[in-house]
Image (tube, rainbow, N blue to C red; front, side, top):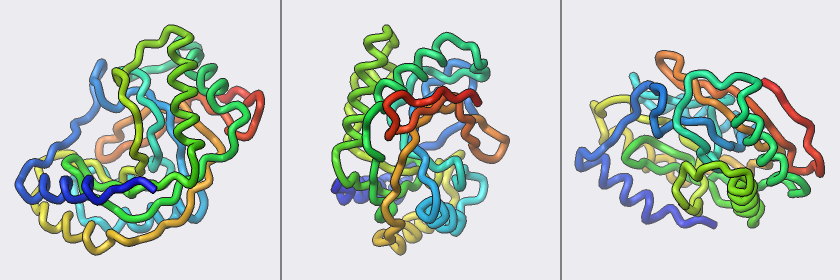
Length: 229
């Protein structure tokens, strides 16, 4: 299981010392929130995540729930406002994702505990096996083979999580956020069984974030069917 103890301690210290960071609504070419490969939990695990996130008293910030909750596998590009169905890069991403997911069993990640960090609050993910790491590595290779520039500059993902809140401005009461996280540090959401990987676009609604699916591939299929959102 991934060890979040040091991460949690650093996040608490950042908020309590006034070193919080925050997101702003996306603009063309921004380095954050670009099209990404993700895994989205479903079922009872999703319900538990959404219900708990809704109890965070964070007015003015991006509190996530429902289909917005996700594990990021890989960020693919800077932010684009429009990604049409016939976009060449979108098709390349979809093909690379299908290749990466083909033949894999479902990804299984236990979500247990929450943690503050400088930019928000997350639910901590503990992979049950190495499937999610295999998916990430396969996708990196499939993208490189297609000549796609590595937006993450060689970053190796070794911590898996679902963001419950992204801060969208200065914190009025960081102590309250830290206290909430401390109170829920041991919560167990259950094991997310993830059978579908997606390429998605993030859209700012004015007060929160929505996820727009672009392409998807089933982890249990040898030749996943294309999806057009």
